[in-house]
Image 1: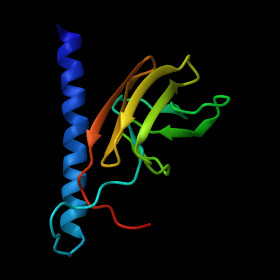
Image 2 (image 1 turned 45 degrees about the vertical axis):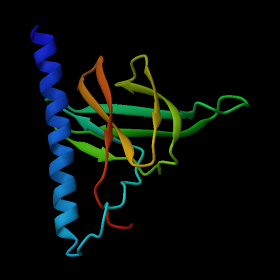
Image 3 (image 1 turned 30 degrees about the vertical axis):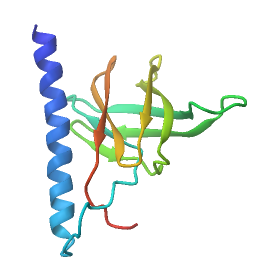
Image 4 (image 1 turned 135 degrees about the vertical axis):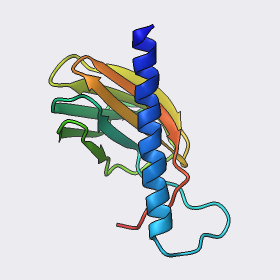
Length: 144
């Protein structure tokens, strides 16, 4: 029961962070939005919700690739406690397989069909505790 409560709290914290960030970005642009705001172009976001730093390796594969399984990308992040990072990889709106390892441990594998207006929130709770949750990212993101 405690594990379920902790998991729910983590998911709610990640969603809350994304809602606040989206609101700040949307309101901070100073532009009036017509209709539905543009989608976040980023494929995933990583959050370290643990109280210690972790090294997180995220490898992404195109699930529909017909040839040898070659990663679309592989990124390594060093996240401080309660740190977060947004991937530089753009979301092309397709099915992806994610291999996520923390501190050099065996990777956990996740598969998601991610629409263009969605991204993946990856939450690191501890060395062997990784959660992935697809989120709708209907907020404006400044062009980089």
